[in-house]
Image 1 (cartoon, rainbow, N blue to C red):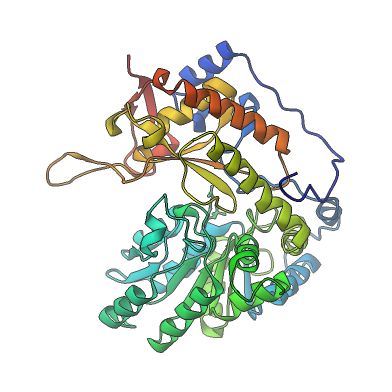
Image 2: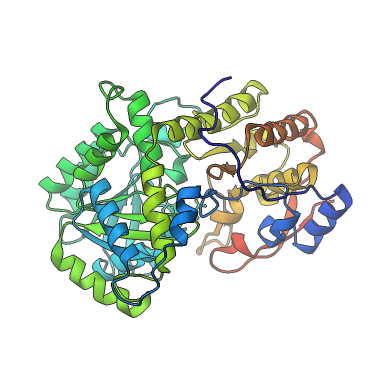
Length: 458
Ligand code: F0G
């Protein structure tokens, strides 16, 4: 036993099945070799995302039955608000139906054309919500965070010297807010240390810039701090989480991750004027401030899930399961971002398939092959998602990394399921020369990875 076993037993089961190989090939053809277009029922092990895919507990399901669906002032809202206040220490809380609405509220209120918002790495939706208002999303992760082979314990850290220089150069008037993503999803699910969070807080406040956390995976980040940061091992996870939020002026949150819920999110802050402004915008785009686009029962599920996500036995299992899966793949020689992230492993498709050039989409090719070989769905983070055309030369520009992310839903799959995925990948790695590239036959202007279509290169 490499890590703590599941601190629960199974009460309800959801059947899954592996379609035969002919059916899998047919589904791929119908989907234009894009796994987003494959019906979930024809996926055996679905590692597309850890977002909104968690199994809820009996306590959460019981809470669902206590949903109060009053338009205004439902009791679940007060439970939700009090729970979030208790965990984060932030006084002003606005529920939203998911994380990107919290981002939309914040950036539509604060960002004006030409402004710049620094972060370690902005997540796609955060970046898009900044750019749509004419702002620039600037990534300042430490150099180790850009090197897949680095074993730095906190590869999600922001480069504090660069941040200081950036704020000195741009000034409060051009930087309305600074963000920090914990854990750093775009950088491999890597954590940020408490020292780094506090360092960022000090620098931002010295420059008069508000500092917000993108807190989607705050509990997993707190667990890494407890495991890896000197002097933190003996502390309660709730206290570490409280310290993280204490350093910040607010946070955006997708409760579809460490809220252990299937839908939900919030934005929390200390500034009452900002709160009043966001609340008015919320009414316009989401709903009344005591439900924010959610049913009362969903607010209850989130309130209960946030507490469960901070249970140390749960976190030991959760992060341990991802780590054990990563170690198994590492022993097989499969190239990945090091070390294991909190919620996912990221396979380096360029090294896995060196014979496939960037214009034939190595990470997309590996994603398609993984579904064909094992009925497993991952997500491409490479040339399909981030490839661009140079506006001057018309030449394609390819991202540095071609990754396939296998995100592990919370409390959903057993170790046996993940061993099956590892078996499939090991076999594929031994026969990697047989994987062929793809040619894109349709690609939308924006966010093309969701709808792009391909055909295999002969
Ligand atoms: N911030 C981070 C770091 C995220 O990972 C996500 C979502 C969001 C914000 C947006 O939250 O989906 O509730 O609107 N990440 C999902 C993923 C989609 O698969 O990584 P949302």
